[in-house]
Image: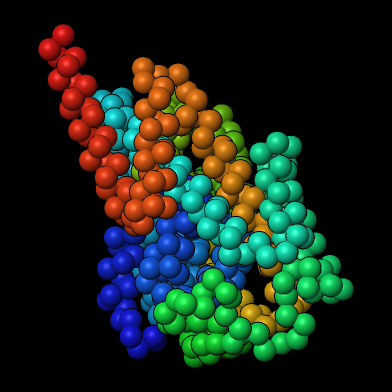
Length: 449
């Protein structure tokens, strides 16, 4: 355990972070970097990127897995469970409340005003994240070329995200084997003490490049076996209870098995796996309609936490409509289905991090691992930039009554982040206040007219 940072202090941070983690994976990764690397100095840039590269290779929500990894690195298994759990808990609570309102009344219009301001503010966070990360990690022409290629591959050619990551890792591996200098890699081991120029004037991080791996993060075959055993029991015992209660093809057991498959297939982020979710939930099982699935995606995009949390809405509506769970219209059945969906969707991510984390920490000085991860890091700049373009289209170019308004919010947000040095939490809070104030003003005019 890091002596100058208690588990209680870290837990308060993870709880606060869970309520403001808007913006999808790019915005959440940017928020984690800003808070943990730049502001609080809990980790160095290199330690953060090493963890992020591993999470980018895994199926599941990258930002949630990154929070789990960093919490585990700071405070062991309890820290990882708390960090990952609190990263998603606010999203579960908010989405359950919104799903209840949706099921009862069909829409939640009050959110529209807030998110009309919040979305361009989050876009600014993503743009600044790509800029700052690029300044730190793109040190050679090859790294810059990888970033540009990743951006064009995703934004223009529409290449699958796993293909982009695999190609970047392959280029990094080849450079590490024959020309390490092309990736700004050291020629030999023992690079932990070399801090980057960008970090030279920063206060020392709690977990810096030269900080030894803590005891709880060291690889141990016995600890790995125990972790795998607990992971298997956490998956199989609840599934067994659901099967005994409702049968192998019972509604909750069916959801458990389906969303476990979703978790294991969700490479490339939520957008890559949502068509599979929609096909199963709408066409195969009939848990909700296609229009309700689209409404659920809209709700998922306007709540904190990972976008894959839209599966909580799918589970809620499946439980709400199920005649086998006391429905239709049973709130208890809907909440039970939501909890089952969330448990089996996010459980694999905890297992990947807690089982694989020690192996990743062990590889920090191994060029065979570090070189492919360095290639992924360079490509990640292009990935974040492509996400910014993806978000910009519906936010800045959608038809509306005030088409210049999102551009104005974006410009003010960039000014606040780059010139006034606002924190991400400050910006999000200001966006919420501005959205509410704007709605009150427009609503007043509408009522008076």
